[in-house]
Structures are given as C-alpha cells and as structure tokens.
Length: 196
Ligand SMILES: [Zn+2]
Ligand SMILES: [Zn+2]
View: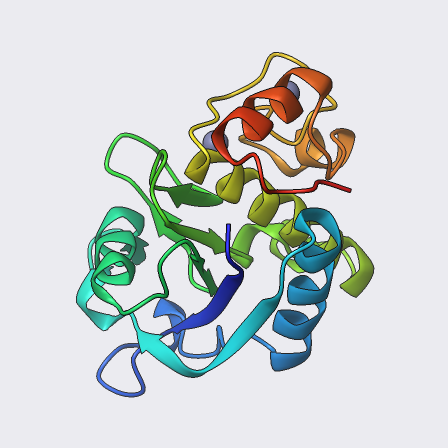
C-alpha cells in the first residue's frame, strides 16, 4: 500500500434541514489525529486532502441518513494514486438499506473505505463528550474498514480489529490491532506492508 489519503465527507452547505447533518462537520484536528494514528499502524504516509466531498447526493429524506454505498461509489470515482487507499471520514449518519445504520463501509479488496463518527460520539448516547474515546473509536473503525480493502473479512476474535461490531460497547472491547491470523492474511495480500 502506497499511503492513505483521508478526505472529509460533508453535509451539503444548503438546502437541507439542520437535523440532516449540517452541523456534522468533521473537525480538522480529528482528521490529523486519525491520520497520525493510521501512519503508526500501517507504517505508510497519510495525507489529509484539502478538498472535501459534498454528500448531498446520498441523502435520504425519509430516513434522515446518508446512503453509505453511494458515497463509497463516489469515492471510487475520485482520482487516487496507484496502490494508495482513499478513506472518507464523515460526521454524517450512514446507512445501508438492510441495516438501521453502519459505522462504515469498504470495498472488499478495493482501494476505498468510508467511516462515520456520528454514532461514535458519547453525546449520541446522551453521555458527556469524550474526545479521547471518539479518537480511539474512529481509529479502530478506520483500521477495520481499511482491513477490508486488503480482502479481510470479519474475524471471530473479539479483540481483533476485524471483529464485526454493531454497537460501541463491542467496539470499545476490541483493540486497534490485527490478530495473528489477520496479520498473516494482510501479509499475504500486501507483502511490502509492515504492521506495528
Ligand atoms: Zn466490517
Ligand atoms: Zn482477526
């Protein structure tokens, strides 16, 4: 893998109610922190792109959420250097039709991934804000979705970052690292990669 590009995926500037995520801007500091964390995990350079993607096309008025798959497809159409990954990070609430929500989505063995911090915030559950917890959860989610881009599927090890998680409680149980089995699978898919 030749680097990770991070791109903020934002709510449309106008034309939608505030509840649809107009206040869900991704803090630049958080993007920088996650880029630094990913650089430590994958030992590659991480670059936060200056531009952002307007996700208005993916908004579903009835659900008041954004269709994750549509955003992922749009990310795939953006230019990205050969061998690099493009990771979209959004504050918007994502869904796929069969699920109430998703924390993120990725192209299996592709180059694009998407994560949402909307449901990773303690405030979403009526608890006091915690930047440390948000940063930790977002890093785990980003590593997980990037793992899918190496062809990894979900792992039965609860502590492995590739464990499937549909609730923040389970997300908090697992580590930000890959279990030995998943490390072997990544090594087979990307021999040049050095994992921390
Ligand atoms: Zn997954
Ligand atoms: Zn694993």
